[in-house]
Image 1 (cartoon, one colour):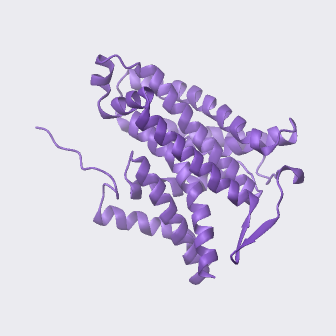
Image 2 (cartoon, rainbow, N blue to C red):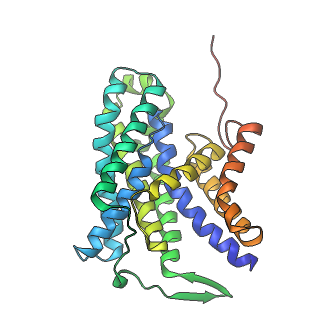
Image 3 (cartoon, one colour):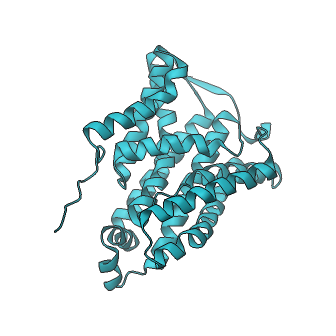
Length: 293
């Protein structure tokens, strides 16, 4: 029983980590909390649903297709909403309010188009069978979740740590003015980060939609609450922290649902968030910013 609960927690935590990766990358490099990020989660799921239902794509093709299209949408939204604020050097609260209003508008438009009815992938998209491994039950969709998350986390780590492009991203996150003086194309890096973040959010939406086979416009809204908890606990802007905090949250939720009450599961993230803010406000891997006179 415990082993199965832990396995389920790892699977949930993998999606939380994948979702929070783009969220924390966006904050770490661009310095904004973009509340439209939950919309990317829902958008990715609906694009994959369209690709499998109408374009008859297999899921292995629909997943990267949905992620890429969502990433392009993220670039457009970022340029329309946040580009003018960056050029005007507006305070951080401005971006928060603008993206909050945009989120309400985008969800309303998506609901008007798709309605709030739950939609499902075609039955032929993925085999719903399960495997028994050492007494543990795991489905193909859950294997896809873990494999995709591991692949994306590894690829993102290699990009940021082992390439000149990753060096430019880290330089812009550390000191935007100095990075531009050293020849970093700030506009290009901003668009790249927006694309990667949107693609990660879209991919997470596809995986959750596939795992539960239930897609509706507001599915990203609930995930945003998990995302906030993960990036605060892990440390704002820290990718390693986002992965570890996502897995920890998934495990705690699964154990709580299995041994206490399923109705208490969603409270775990809030409790973890509060405890982190009380005892370590910068998060598990966050750094205290040095104050200069």
